[in-house]
Length: 266
Image (cartoon, rainbow, N blue to C red):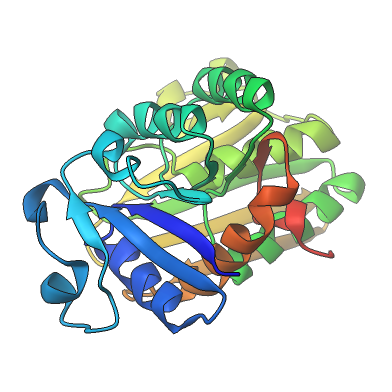
């Protein structure tokens, strides 16, 4: 039996590519989508793909009137939490690809998900190379006591840092707190140049035209350094394979789990 999916943000940059990926998967069925600008239309008419017969709705509440197994959240931070909570109340498991949600948001979502016995798999980045970077960084942090993160995003990316980096910093904090040689308040010059402290890690967010998403984790020890790097291009294709795995695996979870590797054998 196919897994029934509702996709919020179905006509967006990442959502439209995921919709095509779902259409090509024999074990998945896209039943409904959320797109305020194209509400009332068939998704296939908007994207030019006859395989996509799902109807588009203006809100998650309307789309969820048709029962689904998994709700995929790919909209914006301002609407994401309300969409996720609505899906949980309707009995759906949830996959979250939207960045910008806070730890407090996820704590609230986790409480609802556990009460409803539903899984929420939140991934700051579905690209498998980004998932591996997070895992490799956790391993490196066990042995190298100093690190900082530099992330790159496009000029219009307003959330700083990205969901990918928020997740990475939290994961590293569970390994250990990095040692700091010069604290921001001890630096000579504007302390902001030392970045922001996120879960114990100094993070520097760059926003420039030409970037989509990139993350560098710089590790240092006396006379040696290690840099781990993930870079994404202009296509949303790298995020599809990981999102499909998340859709297939989320029903095995209860509560919020952050990171695709939670359902991978790594």
